[in-house]
Length: 406
Image 1 (cartoon, one colour):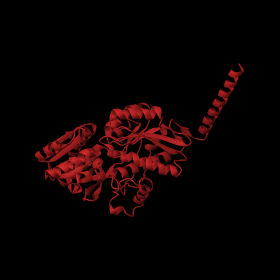
Image 2 (cartoon, rainbow, N blue to C red):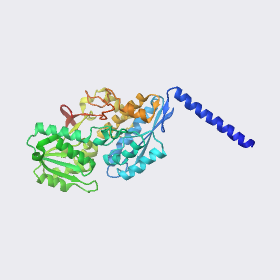
Image 3 (cartoon, rainbow, N blue to C red):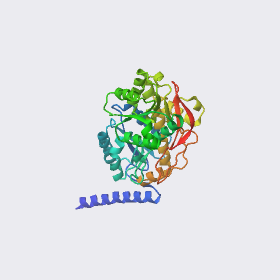
Image 4 (cartoon, rainbow, N blue to C red):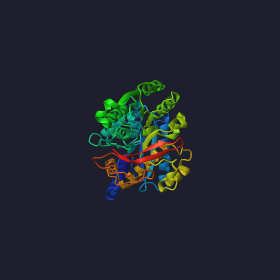
């Protein structure tokens, strides 16, 4: 009896302390959900550290380094960021398994920057059903910018339809008689590209689109698709292939002696991951678009934001490629996340994470092009909404023309 009474007394004491601590936190305005505390904010992501899309994993490596820098500077409102990043090999079934592990096992506060449309679509309903923020998704489907249907999901880069409609505007202004060919992956992304193509051309689509060439992620090469596009008389190629296949397309076009006006998707414009394997001489003259400063562009040598990025790379990620779009992209997404967490103050709840992500006002990032800023709202989850066209010189991307907004 005495032993039971002691146990009850200890339990009551512990419970009282816990309740007191919770009441004190509430009284001080602090609010936490799983993954957050007075000292830590635990976030999760998956990355293709293995498999055919492994070049993208640079994003996860850089972001781990960025959060290490933030932590060494005292964290966010006194809380350190703990990033848990698992390999999913860009395989949606593996993404599902790893995201469930992050939410149910590691109890992360939210997920951040998992790349790929298919992988994010595979976990979108699960995360929304569980009210876990799916923040700054590393995919560009329009369904990642749909607060009415998926209020717990927000994208980062401009969506695929926005990008391709910008290219259509460029083509109509500069090549009104073009015979257009589209190279794309046969998945959800491809559907967005096709829809954007038709939206951008309107009634002219039937006359201007000479050929479309889908490919499967499992295809060993896309040589046959490139041959087919050339045979169709395409003189303006819109190449929206993934990095590995974009490099193949550039190289194969050069082998065939085929020189269409070649527009390359933003996601495959990395000099290191795509253009160098394709052959820099073969890539000369390619056209793409960006919302961010190019690290190799001497225009930004004395730019304060570029200097901040350069200092970060030197101190925290010296092994990273300074010419890779993945390093500048990963840095910018991490920088924006830090802004959201700062705005949260001591209300580090999942509700407030999404509330602040949808309340960004004129946020400037180190590497955004001048004149651009981030603005979001409860009804507008689009983060980056503007582009500037750029052309590859054989050494670097060189911007040209005015800023274009979809």
